[in-house]
Length: 530
Image (cartoon, rainbow, N blue to C red; front, side, top):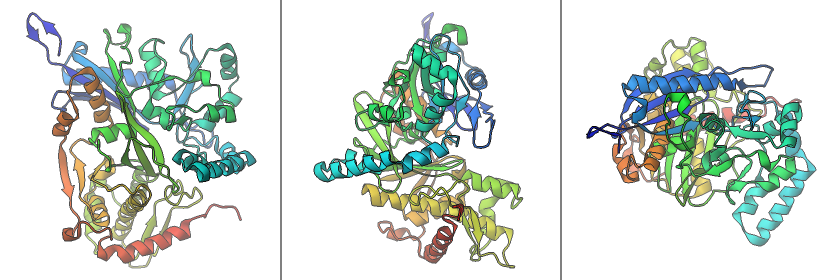
């Protein structure tokens, strides 16, 4: 381990880069999983038209390269000491490019992009979909196969790649021509980075990224030939799907002065799950950033949901496949940022103290649905709202109502998970920027009536990709070793901890929660045209 020179064993490191929605972050980790150096670069989103959200591939590439060099420099180490590179990326953001030149045909179309919304709506309402649902219901009745039940419930979403890719194939002439000539490559960010880092040698993704596109069959573990033929997507453009921990080749020596072995690519939420060491069935990870993503480890079988939980592949390492069920709430950090822009507070760090400074929210309810409501209500037409305002309402009451609403959404997702998966929950770990708010964390623990742990590391996606790459390279031996490296900043215990095995929320909040649910119902279907 480490490079040998004149009998001196040089210390080795693992480098991990997370390409998120708003920034690229790179960390260099040592054997104790301590961050020895880091670097960050902003991602600039482009909005060429209403509803279009893009990223310039060249700008993203320059950002990636500068983060790798910056993190290694900040660590005070040399490139040759990097034993493995792990890459974690935002999911379902894609581009297409020329197989021969590597030049993209268009900007990255991000997961937030709405250009295919009308296409999605018309497909979901189509006779074809009604027929598929009908046939699959019958198939499920006859075979009782969960796969048929999943197919009978499927609805398309703009967050999945499927119809944004259909849109690109229809609107970009170059893409169409390249497909006819057999020269078109499709890829999410991880795939495109691999292609560029290896100078076109590797066109691949991993199972965690593929499963989040909506084009991948998580039951058969391959690209869905049925779906591709249904919406006319050519299978020839898709990358090879590899294990999450895998020898993806090395970076071309011309890029960093020497080759760096690429040993993992991973989708960001699944990487955060691995970074939290949620290796066992029933382990739950909640990432509270721009939005909230709640994932539960469902083991070796994908979960079929009727309430909007989405089955994804967590990771495939060796022959082991781990599946997760995921629910999300789109507006978490968004709600806090909005409140800050309204000048309800100047420093985010003050919000917890403001919320604790009043006994309750004075009957004020906030519904955090700037982007509609996701699981379990699944209403894209819901509006964000503040209800129950009075002359006595202060800024502290408003801030408390906003923070409470984020914990209430956690409670909704958690209850949905319990109800749908029927898996006993073993541990809960929460990360992401919003998790640093003690008020939200404590209320979440109270409402779950479970211990909630917050890690020392906030950059869990980075750590997860580093862990997988390090295991693949032999830098770390096994998962037990990783668990010992895991640090916890604080454990929030439910107040009234004697009732830990009951699921009823903290008593004082029953009525507040009921009022909030009433406000939620009134906010639903708001944007439907009369």
